[in-house]
Image 1 (cartoon, rainbow, N blue to C red):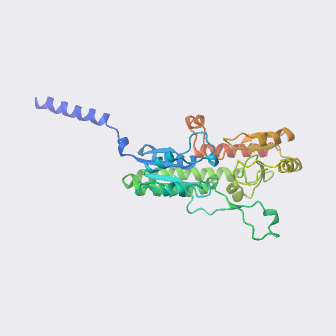
Image 2 (image 1 turned 90 degrees about the vertical axis):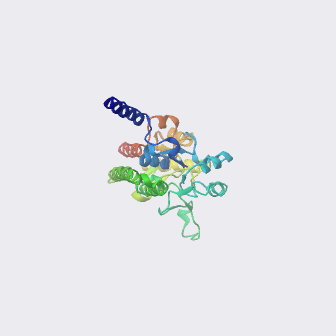
Image 3 (image 1 turned 120 degrees about the horizontal axis):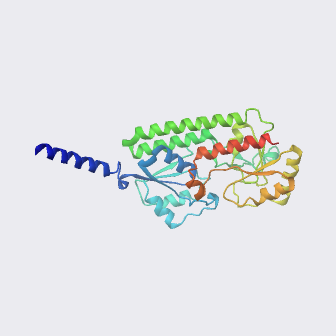
Length: 310
């Protein structure tokens, strides 16, 4: 009889353990991120230990994002809010000032990265020495900057959830390795290119990549916002430059109508190729399992192919 009771008890406990989740949803910390790279880094480091969501709806171009009262509520309900920097999210201070949650950890993921400038007056610096360009907010498009961002995210996760620190550190180490390998892929792409000019039919997003590898990015846009239309003169000048350099590929950006790139391609016979800035992704990309690393690897392949065809 005693033996039967023991067997029943053990069986009952096994059933309970099998049915119980490893960590109840209600006990998981909640993380909100402003852009896709941070969202993906949280996924890679924390996996199922946290509930993470992207503030931007899938497919929304982030430069056109306008926070609403619901945005403040969503951020206020989180344990951690991760943003890029005040240039990328100029609305951040106003939103954070209105959040009522003293325990919320707010993380500037770009902290520790050295910003570069893009100046519209670079050709006239001697004449206008006091002219300063905009600071480029697109820090994540250099894999080594992405590594700094991932480290900032790791630090935040451990601060809020120290019980899982070993788990987070192990996964972060695997992500760091992927980012190092990604950097090596870009090193190979730009080790001995036929030229160092990228024609980009979108706004300036790849400045950090260009800065690391000594590239020239030519675009008809004059700043970081895709909302400002390029002038006809700028388009004509870019067409002439492409002809001079005999470049046959024009890259365009994600989530906006590539009408400018299309016009230039029609006039030059160039091939249009997507060069993904990884600001955000579409629903289809999310469902297909897109990651920061997969997007950047695809970019590297497209850049290599573009150089080969020219």
